Length: 588
Image (cartoon, rainbow, N blue to C red):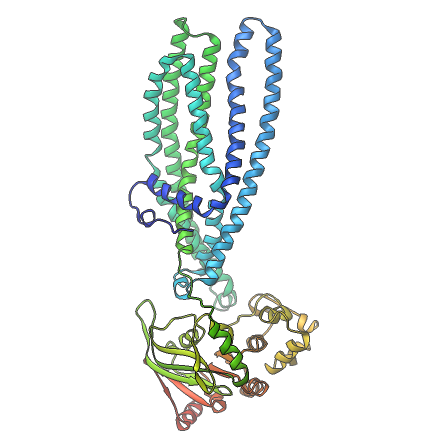
């Protein structure tokens, strides 16, 4: 699957060239659908042929009527009925085939994009707002899937229909070639006048849709805060502004589309007048029969209808170009580096007996924005230890956990997991070593569904007894067993129905049930009282004495339970002693 040509993404000029590159990408992406697209084209060609014959036979019907040949008129009439029934049947088949392709393509494209979001480099992905990602997954994917089969097929079949109609007209009167030579440039020129404007308007619409989706998501996610601070009117005013912005962009696109269609339509009418006037002149000169005139007029009508259909594809083509480039921007993101080494399995097997330690030595890290976070820091955590990371907000505590998880890649030094007592058995921290780690992030991370479903999401084979054991370790079973459905109780969106402290304990239980040698906790006990916090940590370490636990905290009350405390400040990481820990606890 090749990337969208950079010439297409950065092209400042010709829309036709840009659309060409976008279409190449689309048909490369859906190359496994070539036969199905060809089937749809074949059905549409049959459909076009039947419609063409319906139009073509009108001339014969007129000539037979003039000649009072009723027998042949009845024969043609029956043939017409047959062709009309066939045409309806073929239309149904074409629609069914298009729907088959659309739904399959939509599913494939959404799966590809969703997988890219899950597996792409995390830092690259954070350039996109989640609302924007949702818009690309829904609106943009839908535009592409809807038009991949239909767009070029419509242009192709209608162009053939126009060509065939022109040939029939010329066969009836070769002098009509003069009209064709006059008409063609008019149509071509008028159809391209507003294409750049339509493209710009469509691009603006997509950006506004992404903004609106992002704002809606944030509004609904923080609805309690919106209500608590009395911000409903302000949030509503913002949506009104976005809707005005979207309305203006949509109306601008509609205006340019109508202007493009209107100018081309007027050009077509002018061309049609020339064509029909010339045809009537040829009839009055005795060169053409009334039947031939009828054929010329109906074929001219066919050309006009086909031309109108093709012109109707201009806004569609530009929507398709905009959506394709937005989808490509997402799909072209780099995947995070993954490894599948035999050393990993050795590390796991050796770690089962002795546990897994974490070693960081002379490590430096900066985000791709060039913001330096760490400068040659060192840290270690061993099985059976609880290690705390403290320091002001924004200094890098969560960033360090992301490095341990292999979500971020260091630029210098070492960050590795190794078998306790044998530093030779080690692996650099990456997505490969992530399965050694259970993680409790900041905030409410419980998902909609039952408590049991949340637990089995992490450990599908876990028994009810194991789930209850994990809840007990996290001091969560005391309130879970009082629920009407126990572990089968349903959790609302973002943990609605439970307090912040209850949600934190459920999240800790979910991490515990993974049974990994390393546990990372990012402010995971911030909503717990001191006694419960200490009991949770004691339970975790008592249950598995070889577990390595690393936590971040702003609450010094937990520090006395830790084996070692590191302060993170100004890009440095240093161990602090008991006196400083006591000072922090006293100040708190």
